[in-house]
Image 1 (cartoon, rainbow, N blue to C red):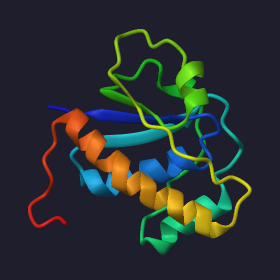
Image 2: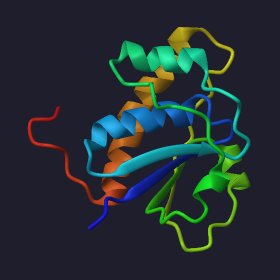
Image 3: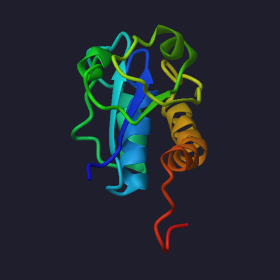
Length: 143
């Protein structure tokens, strides 16, 4: 049986969705595949987003901005929109997709500390919501 696929969607796919992708990959510990995309992706991931992830010990090497259209034919099990604009601009998928909307404040243009705060907000609110949506229990020994 294949792992469930989670698509995290934002407008630019440069900050919040990238941080959510890295955080969910670690938190779900191989029990789901996690990717992110944007409705209007920027050319690269925000430097402060990458630094905020590195400060938390999260890998960033594979993170890059992607267009949501790359995933239209993928069997998405859960679409997570992390900003209101992406929720309203999300294209129609050819098959039904379960959705979860959880917006986070954009730290773009702000200091690193703002990115760290959003990273922690994503960790605290989004991880449990995605686990619940996928029916995944926490790993034993996990805090």
